[in-house]
Every structure is written in structure tokens, then in C-alpha cells.
Length: 159
Image (cartoon, rainbow, N blue to C red; front, side, top):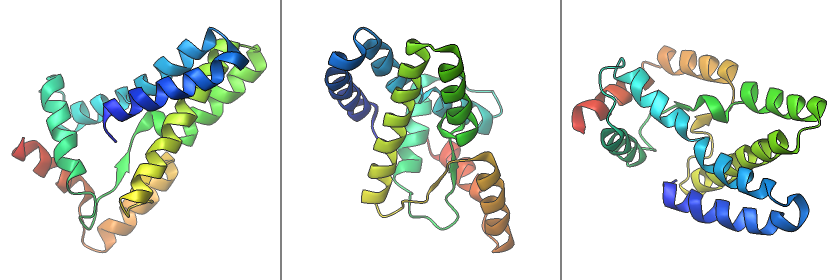
């Protein structure tokens, strides 16, 4: 999903939430966008921290976005995982923090937008929503002779 779409969706979501959470709706909005910082980390990981270009990161993900239906495609965005979302919710609850809860809401809202987008593209299960799920699915793909990391290497060569 394009960053522009997340900005528009986040703004709409923040506007709807404003009567309920007040100024924390700004935190919701920012969190609904900044969750995608893990895409930059993904780019850095796959290029082995040799290329820090934001412009090339967008080109990398744009290339991958054009190959969503390629056999072997599997994605893991670390901030989009249950291992981040569940503890964030629990900490916000135990701390009684409206700000952390707004971050959690922004993350969940963003993830739901992504799920809808991927389903509309015909690849609803492209992204793993857990590290455990990712490693299990990656192992299954490798057993079938597919190389999920190979698509990332190909993207780096083509940008």
C-alpha cells in the first residue's frame, strides 16, 4: 500500500477517533504511518546495511509490490507482527497509558488497511503476521524449491 494511502487513511481514522481520544488522535495518526519504518529496516537487512538511501528503499518496495503474486513471495514486517502488537497492547493496558493505546490503535488500523489491500490484490496471506509463522512458511517454501529471499535480492539488482 502506498504511503499516501496510509496518510489519508490515518487522517480519516484520527478525525473519527478525535471525539473519543482527543489529542491522542495525533499519536494515532503518526503511529499509523511510522509503523512502516520496518520496511526501511527490511531494505537495510536485505542489502546488508550497505545502502541507506530512502529513495532506493521506496524503489525496492515498489519493485516488490509489482511482484506480489510471484511464487515464493513472503513478507515479514517486524512492527506488523503479533510479537510487537500484543506486548504493545499489554503495556498500554497495564500502564494505563492513553498515548501507548493510541500507538497500538494506529498500528492495528494500519495493519487492517494492509490486510484489506493485500486481499484486494488477491494475495491475502502474503505477509506473515508472526515471526513463528514466517519461519514455518519460509521453511515450507524452501522445501518446495522456492527462495523468498531471492526475490529480495532480485529487487535490489533491479532498482
